[in-house]
Length: 296
Image (cartoon, rainbow, N blue to C red; front, top):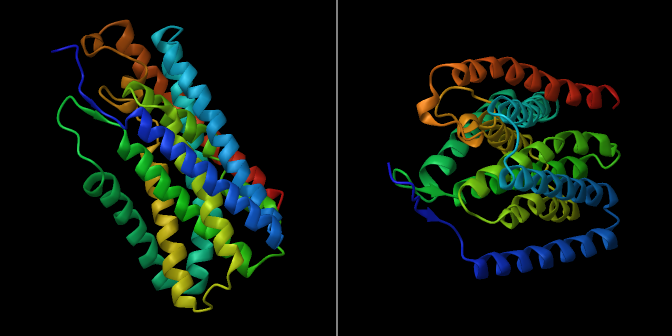
């Protein structure tokens, strides 16, 4: 197998333009939010942005300076992925699913199905294709951005219809952003792409939530059920994608740089043992959101 890997990543100039556009967007949205008094939405949006970028920086450093044994790297990655997916799945179950089906059970369920299938379509069918042996960075950023926009729309609509809600609900929904940024940054760095690409999904929550909070949303239960359900399904699709799978050839083993010729012996046992960490980390991420929910 050739050691050279063809990558298809945005140019540095494209990254700079994207960064500038996102900075302008965040500035405009923040100004409008301050004028309109949408302090809760701004707090949630900026928290999502800062937490995700902090996680991304940690992921960049971890991928740039690979240290520790294979077993230690696998454990760290299992906990990063598990905390992220556990928090996301539980957030969806506690906060988004009830909101979708409360408007209309059948249409809410249909929206959830559309969101999951749509997320799969975005991830598999609509994102740029990579040939065998080629690593594309855009699909990761694209899927995360779509998910963040969906979460922002949901948060904006919820606080537009129920402004008296405390900020803890929104913060619980975006609680996964740190681990998600960490995992996504490691994926990008392995593909030779800039971590600055994650500025898009990090800012998308705020950019989507504040404009929705400025308008009066439609009062139709059918509309709310389908839109909230679709956002929930997209949320769940991304959450399932981040589950820490531990088999050979999985994202986890590739991230830990486990060599394909190490499928027997001590390394194989270490990969098998990390399954326990994958389970416990996913449960821990779930319990963190349950704890935040209990404080509501």
